[in-house]
Length: 67
Image (tube, rainbow, N blue to C red):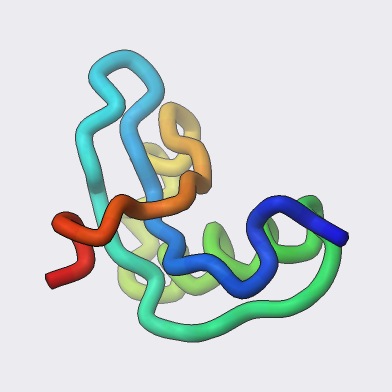
């Protein structure tokens, strides 16, 4: 089972760990499939997000970040 499956996810900035965006959907699959879904979703929000994705990673959100 993947560590990301069934969790609330978001994108964080590599250097600062700052939350960039919260992924609004539940996802299933392997970690690699989930990361691709989240990043593809973020890219579709705006093509300029391509540059942001170069320095971002998918992470599990803390409860206080979701509310």
